[in-house]
Length: 100
Image (tube, rainbow, N blue to C red; front, side, top):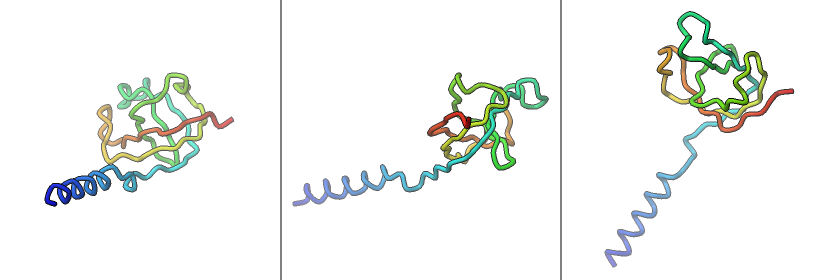
């Protein structure tokens, strides 16, 4: 009986731990920016800009590393800041496609 109770509690906790309800993915229309020649952003290389704010993607596929490229993206805003510039928030791109 105790064994069943322990297994039930474990499975219940595991189910809550795997929940993705705390992940907020938003859809945005954005512009890719090459900032490798911009003072203070040289090591950031590529940023994604939307709603008047720049973000550092945790990963940007090479085929989207085009300055001025307009894209549609589903992104998750992360609570971390970018290593290349402490004032930029990181984002994780879930999906990305060209806007045109």
